[in-house]
Length: 192
Ligand code: ADP
Image (cartoon, rainbow, N blue to C red; front, side, top):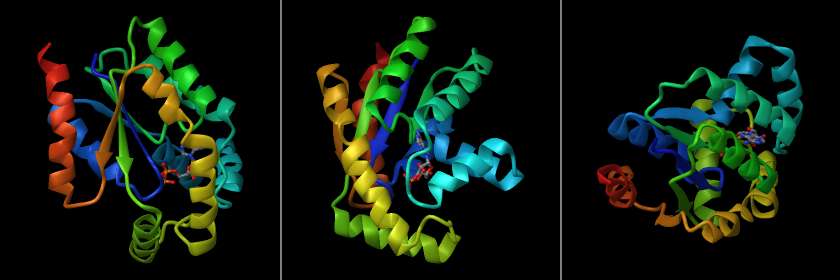
């Protein structure tokens, strides 16, 4: 199975590139942010809990997200592979993902880290907030999310570097250019 993690700060383009990856390589796109927003939209208990964190720009607790993902993966046994978008976001989530995949004899093959400078991230998120009206794309929440990213999520880069799967990709340029750089890293994994 081709299991890929796409990693990067809020606004780095994870969602956009994930969709292209899913299409090109026939992977199942798993976005924990989207899953949580759906829970909020349908008004479930999980959604209410998630909203109380997301609206502040904080992370939803590890145990909640890990359980949500575990039940999803268990249902998708026939997938050719997964593209994990927005998960893992903490080292404990990274460890949980390794365990989950390990149970099926699988592992993370590549971690694509989209590198974008902070000023550009803020611009993109503010613009997205105007267009899509996503509740957490406002100046105050953006600031918290970027801080949370630096403190809780960025340490995963070392975690994956040590496992020899980290690939840094410049996340500035046209969508097509960035995808070209990504495909260059992923193509060799599909021919072996
Ligand atoms: P972005 O990368 O732009 O912040 P996401 O849709 O990936 O967008 O995430 C939105 C919010 O959903 C996060 O700020 C966080 O509160 C919550 N969330 C998403 N994925 C996770 C996760 N793996 N662990 C904890 N919280 C998460």
